[in-house]
Length: 125
Image 1 (cartoon, rainbow, N blue to C red):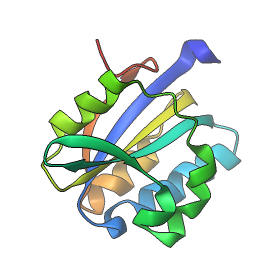
Image 2: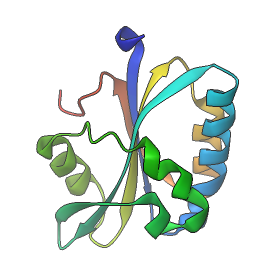
Image 3: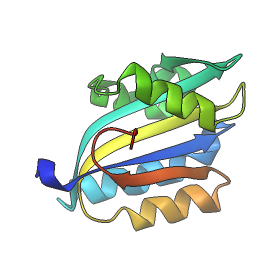
């Protein structure tokens, strides 16, 4: 399934903006529609990216701590940090499968921003 690898970057300021989308993402994975490969949360402090455990952002998201495979490169982290306002956060999801439309709709509806999405595990390019 690696040929179907995709990524999405979701920007947010408050945890409640992403809970619904992650609920939808989990439902898609449980139904076998996709496989979550990596989930990383990034915080931009003065423009410098750092990864944050999901459970530190919201205890309800702690289950995603185990999904952090550390596949993002420093270049990927820098791309995300440049795309989000200083002091805000982003979730980067790498997955194998086709559509996560239901999750994207939930994230957008809850006030999060879909910063980028595309094919491949790397955000560069």
